[in-house]
Image 1 (cartoon, one colour):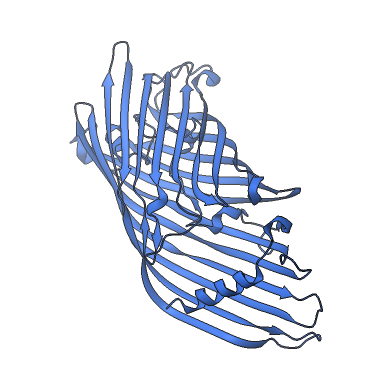
Image 2: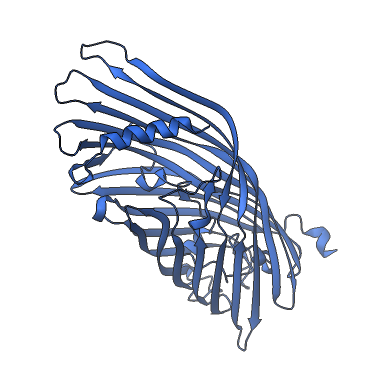
Length: 444
């Protein structure tokens, strides 16, 4: 079943590439509207994020956050605390600068982030949410030029891939006396294509050895995430909230098509490749095993005036498998630590709009699930955010909605040990509408 993989491994072993002499460059071609991220070559790519723009502006502290007018789909238990039907739609813009050695290249893109429609069927008791988010994204386009150890023979290696996984879900939460539980359950779907091309040119230029490998995986399966949250009221409108989220190891179906071709390119111009090896396998059925993940967060705040919190997320990616096999570049115990907060000077001051705005600040650090060349891929970042409120009642804290903006600047990876360093700037804009849609019957 995996005959072509053995052939590819044999060719790569025979070539015995000297990595110390290799120089790698990354290019945006042929799709300049994609974020070219070399680490998306491994696993399922860059993981999606369903944190709202409000939470991203605070470093992404989402496990313990619950407010009356801010939707937090990261922890489904938070839906219970919503006072109104809440609709949110977000756009993401990102610029990525990749550095490998002295080489740099940049790419930018604008994409749809996520959307949610949450409906409190009974305020502070029961709520549902219909949502969509990107589950993961893949795009890389790289070219390596290397020298075979002990020879002057050259090797040209090209790697490229693209695709995405998406998650459509229904969230349900319920609670009483400050305690709430919830779950997001839905369907993960999408496809990812990976390919590699190797051109081995002998020093005599009389032969060129070519190998070409490509696979396309189509994914589909159920996925669930649960959350719990407790929010205790203190004196003078102060509160403390504690939340946790978790997913158990889950399996997603895969249907794989792949082919492997190897041959020789004659030295004269225009000559066709003389193929001597062909392997093609279609409609292979298998599973992807995703790791369990757990998060915990604590928040302290006062009404609509301020909120501060810390967050921790951990996932054991050593259990990740596709078609029953682990992958060498995937296996880190990934984690993310975040901190942040928000301040609203005077939520009810209708005469001074700047004092009604919310100002946010945060930061984070962590370790990615990718482990390459015996080196962990770490990351860190800082965030800023603001909320431009749309008031429906200027005499209360009630909101008709808001425009939330967040800016995230950070770095992932290192140029040591042949890895890449990615400096990124992410901007998110989300429109939130709070209304009494679908709630009239609940109040009758």
